[in-house]
Image 1 (cartoon, one colour):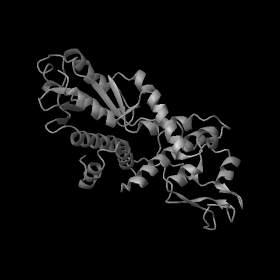
Image 2: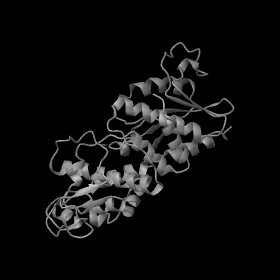
Image 3: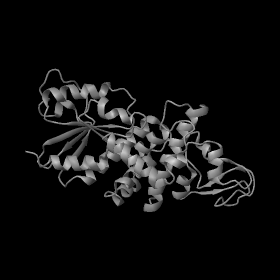
Image 4: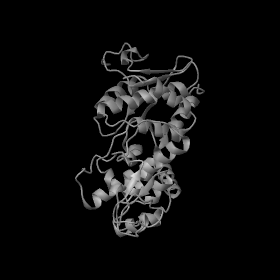
Length: 324
């Protein structure tokens, strides 16, 4: 698939802003969760959002959404800046649409599993919404994308982002046959497989091979088939991966076979992990009373796990052009 002019323009407007780029990628590749209704907290008359969330022992803090630009109303349509004027479910404006990250917890899950999944989804939604609102990013989230379509779109967004961010004269090439790579071109044991993404500098040197993986749960056989001949015949070329994996993000740095891993939104993945791991009965209000504290937690987690973003990928590729 190819990007639209609107999608390219959106990326061009925010090339120097890592969080904005993360928000655009995630927004365009949106995967609606079927349990977003967890945000519709049941309220008693005169009860505040905070009081209701604590009574229900929720794993998320409604202040995250309100700080991100969402407004909450009671069943009578009265703003929930104070206590509810009538009992019933909270109503949010704009409509709450969370992203489904965790394929392990079913939509029909109950108890702590549902609490964990819904709370972590709402945490990332708040962080994403804050960036979109503060930067006035006009990104239209799709109603539905097939998994293969999402992966292809992520790859195409990544290729365009790389090409626009790297120096003039550099090339970002996709699906180059392995037999077209110097060092592999006359080898009898190199198959007809193609590379995912190749980065070539202005001196026509192969700088890096990059695998684009929206999620890390798909079959790794393709990567292995590419890496074996590359590491055997071109050990000088680093092999990296860019991914948007959330549930297995903590495992990437020590389980992935690539030389380096880069994440679409490392701090949001860190925040997702933190909220997802909150024990039953623990209060998110005490751990993260506001969105900024949640954001700091996410950054800290990402730093500990050595999850680097796409901005670091650009920096690493640029600096490789200076290596003799």
